[in-house]
Length: 141
Picture (spheres, rainbow, N blue to C red):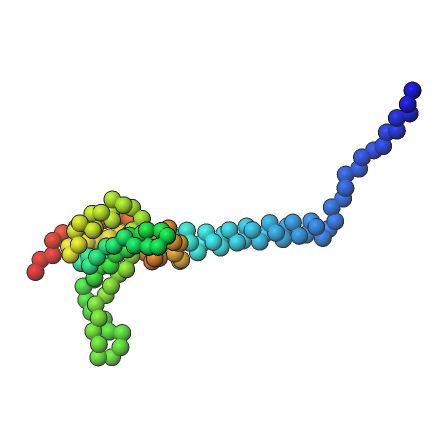
């Protein structure tokens, strides 16, 4: 009969430095994820803008997005002696909203939008995303 030697297996101890590095990495990943979410996906503000729809276009190199411009009533001056109208540039993620706007350029709209801190390529070029048409009517001239 063969002699069988039984030895106890002791779990390896993880050094304090490796444990520190694991916690540090976990904290960095969680903090980075929260920062990315806050910058690109947290809705910073929302509201309604009103005005005459100037245009809506679909453009982009890799991600085709809908971009539009609304001309608001009133005037402002960036420099002394010049007059400029208020313009609201926005992106649209919903195809049906974009098609309604494209087919009714030149009309008066109340558009509900969400504002983000940053832009992501598949959402559009601007940090303002129109998500609802509140009112559409002909302009009385």
